[in-house]
Image 1 (cartoon, helix red, strand yellow):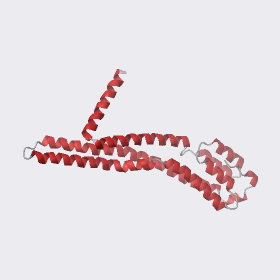
Image 2 (cartoon, one colour):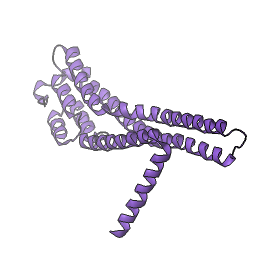
Image 3 (cartoon, helix red, strand yellow):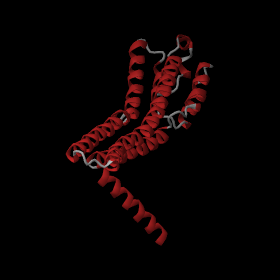
Image 4 (cartoon, one colour):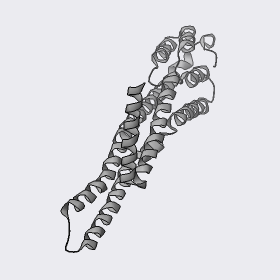
Length: 226
């Protein structure tokens, strides 16, 4: 317990020192990093809970459906944890309706609503990834202005170490901005890529369920809607 308390005390002291040196800009970047970390943890939990990228049983169900084995297809969809089960199941049940275009549009809209839910929060991460370096650069500019004001006020009795120290403090905010932006940008790219891959899979799956050759399938073989 003493070691943990010492580590926590050291981290707290270092954080307070960085905040004191960097000022409001560093405080803003720290706040953005905390909110971004919470958003990332939530999105990872949401993606795992929804089964993002895990559609093996859905693919197997589509293959069984194409063979005319609707019973197996329905059973496989029931066993799947994928969030795309509902639109795919609806597409299978509506594949032989007269107004196929309207049914297809409805399934596409249902899938797109699911993607919109997954994409909620990704825009904020993208914004942080773009703004954090600019906020850090803004802090650097303010620090440089302050340093050169001090240089002007000193007149001929300029101490180079004081100027170097002021520049170092100013550059600290740029480093903080990059430290926030780089991991957020990487995670945002990973999460956005996962959603985009699922969107491509869903489009292919729904087109597969509405394939023209399914019109000839026996009505008794159609799976029940979700």
